[in-house]
Image 1 (cartoon, rainbow, N blue to C red):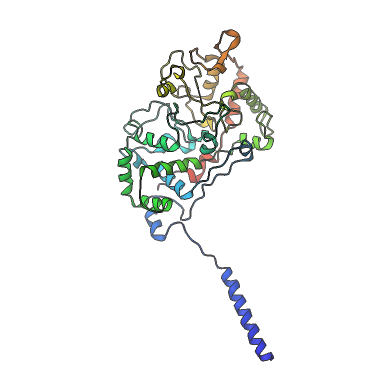
Image 2: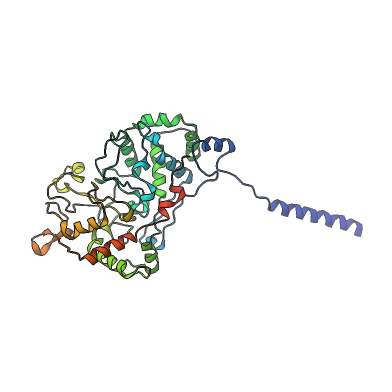
Length: 389
């Protein structure tokens, strides 16, 4: 009996050991096959494994009812490549990144950007890094119930629509979408990227702009000192323990004088468009050219302000070089115009332009506060950077 039991027990032991050894084996599955990665690596510096573009909002944004977008990683990766590819322009000279540089929060340091043929754009390039997150910030309604839209005159309703307009714009990129589809279809690495994103190699205009939209919706800028203070206090009107006295003074001045338009939490604006008194006589009709309403002439998008210290020059025409210039405008330079926003009028002076008359210390404090909105991690994150070799 014993002689039969011992071999049986030995068999069970070996079987158990074999099972344990199998459990310790790690099977690695890469996003790209070796052959695919060899093609991609000729042009792009992408990791072999998929990069996560999932978005996690901080608690202070969740408390506002904001919801993080569900990002599809393969589409965001494709969108990133498209964003940095100069093939999207007529003569292969400019990309989306040419006017939206990551190190300055996806803005341009020129008052007017340079298009594919060297001609200047009509308006200053809006900073893509001015929002906490595109889908959560733009997709939510403000307190007046109006949804924020795109471009200075808000003529585009989605990022996808804005992207198509920019690509085809006769000054910016000059590339008809139908021609772009054929152009990209000739590139083997795009065949691979579209297959990973969509399940097949078919390249279409809607897929191009959807991928760009997916990438831009993955941009998340919430690691500023302001966000740190918000997470600690959960109240934008309280003094932040991580701010010095000058920064807290500037925050209080901002909340008292600026937040009625720009919002107090840097995640949702209270208003979408306004006339801010830049000119007494309309030089650019702005929203008025889209709506054909006299009431809208000279009105422009009220931009989000994250990373604002990095994104000068300022205003729709880039007329102000520094934040001090911007503060001075609101302190003493607001011009009278029939469409001047009511919040910039003095009701005790017949509705004439408001004169905030900030002291030098108050101006310095406001600028100090605006500098706390910078997110250094966002402007250096590799997954948002140029993937081309």
